[in-house]
Image (cartoon, rainbow, N blue to C red; front, side, top):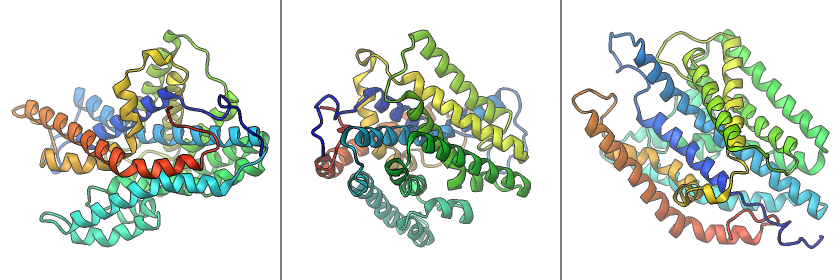
Length: 381
């Protein structure tokens, strides 16, 4: 193997940690703020209520941002390894991913099983977590309706793991032209899947948790990596602002007009509505990612970068924290709106506390081992 120069063997962008924190925050708001009228309510939302519900639903695309960022960064690191060393050691890739994901993932599943048998828990959900153990959580969500458990959010990790099954092999053996072909194939498969879901009038949850549908976000991240060729976008602050606004508008339009991914309305989107809506989700994620990529490090708030660094824990524990603190606020009534947002802030603070404890005392030992297997260092100095 060629000896790498220190500057060439590192790729750490603190603004990507900022993007991770933003993605988590969007998912947190999606899971804690009311996204529709109270179940059983006869009132039909309209006007400002529809806008607010659509905004909360649009926060679901925080997960799309996670997926696009993951694909972009994984592809960037793998291509750098291949180009700088002349080879790609797939075994080392899997060791790094296992050390980063599995410890906290299985700790979360253990907490979920324990929570199922606590007072107020659902013992039956412990059995369903078995699907998560073998990284079939997305299949469980799509086909069995999810589980009543604070660790249900870990279903998305199974889609990441499925992506890892083929992406390192593709980067190892494909040239750039073939990688473009892989991205095109993933996008075509996703849209064929969406078209069939529209014909079948599939449920929103079934569509959202489908791995092939979500692979469109991964394809978008791969395409961005291939197009940039290891360089950073050279754009001004106002251009970045425009990208962030346009990306947000893509998500809002998909939620408000196309009812993607979820909606207070019971009407199902058409096949073309699904295809356009999910495409806007991916495009919006890429616009926001590019809007942050290459930002001046001096402008980045250190606390947000830190929270991005512990974002896996934030994601894993936020439903647990919200369930403990909010405890029965399915809707915001005018008489307790202040109390709700106070509890929301406490839930967020508890999430940060749990994630920090997890990162420093549980995840860090595994991350130290992971660094021994790194070819392209992606952690801060």
